[in-house]
Amino acid sequence: MEGKEEKEWEPRHVLVGYDGSEGAGDSVRLVRALVGGTAGAEALLVNVLPWGGGLPVAYRLVGYDEAPAWKNFFRAAEEELAPLRVAHRTYAGGSPAKVLNDIAEHEDIDLVVVGSPHRGAIGRTFLGSVAEGLLHGASVAVVAAPRGYRERVHDGFARIVVGYDGSAEAELALRRGAALASRAGIELRVICVSTTPVTFGPFVGPLPPAVPDAREIVARAVRSFDPDVEVVGKALEGSTAVRPLAESCGPDDLLMVGSRSYGPLMRTLLGSVSSALIHAAPCPVLVVPRPHQVAKKPIEATGSAAARAPEMSAGPRPHPELRSLHDGAASALTKDGAA
Figure 1: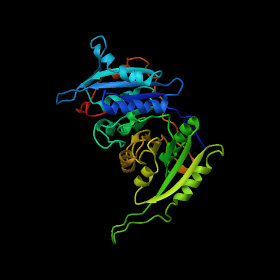
Figure 2: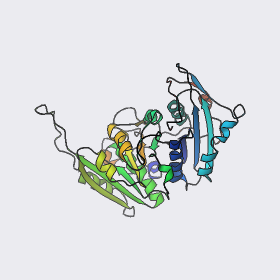
Figure 3: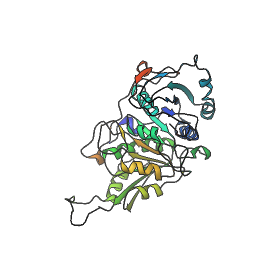
Figure 4: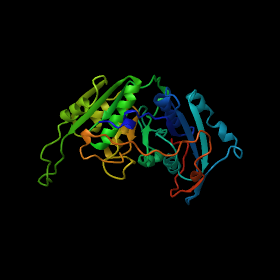
């Protein structure tokens, strides 16, 4: 049932938007929780210097020979991530979301980590323009750290919680979540929420011949795993899936969901449920990209892994195409917003 790559999925090459803010510190702490014990894992920290002009510009890599002070800019993050292998780069001009997305496109990146801007409630994630841009089309999985995550004591995750509805997108999240849970030796919890159909007076459209049964969907998902896998299924009810899923998570969990079920394949696509979950859940939320094939029977098939790109550079030199790429946006990274 499971593709080998998804069964063994493990983020090794992690891209982090880093601007020195508190939200960036949350991202760094989340990287430790995700890959701190992974052999051969490495993190690439990227800072994008703001461009104050009103017109879009082509961004470029800033060499540390021309701006040596920026090399020390990453020192605190390097110390926090030690002994993890860390590389870092600074770019000038352009949109941070555009720069990060281009790196994810051209290099061997498994996961992009973003933090919340410096506002909003502690323990909740608030999407800034950078995270919002990445979650609307990144080619790899994106995980958002709640505000204040850096201040917690973390010894890995307590559980991997997967929001599951039987779709191909949810199936991919489930298989990747199972791989993380199995490797860490922690519980995998599968939650399906049965929501009440919304009707508007007499204007009722055609209803499906049978309303999906959350209990059956969860039971089939649990049965798909080998007996030695620690998996717990739970069927809940609610007016929407957001509140039951968010309330099922603790601050030390990792919540994983699939992208919305329409739009380009192999893209991370933020839907209304995943967007609301990122804001409501007390823990990090990881959104996986759409599988590059959508199965006709998603409960019985697994999505395939995203196509791999060339290997990630270990040092500060990027893929040649990333040295000067035209940016079609004019937004800039500020100290009040985490990448």
